[in-house]
Length: 134
Image (cartoon, rainbow, N blue to C red; front, side, top):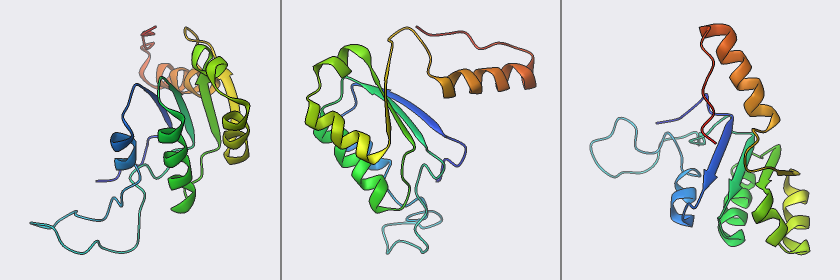
């Protein structure tokens, strides 16, 4: 089932297999009783995902996910990496990610710009501010 409203995804300590599930066809098994050929057209599970923030995930897992998003035509616009993890990354890894999307370093205890915008919109609509979980 597609998750059409998710635009920003924050993840930490995920295994590559979990990230790979986000590259699946949302149409593949919907409405079927068992395994069968995927329906067409291909619809990314996270159709509107444009921003990824992560930490504590190996570069090979992230690069497979980012490359997979490119392959299915669902490019990311921005990638945020939490500071301690960003500092440990090699220059080649950072350069590769920067070629795939805008690359940003973010602080552990600070929300990114998109998260602030989403929180503001939520508060405006609901009248209830979201608590920070930092």
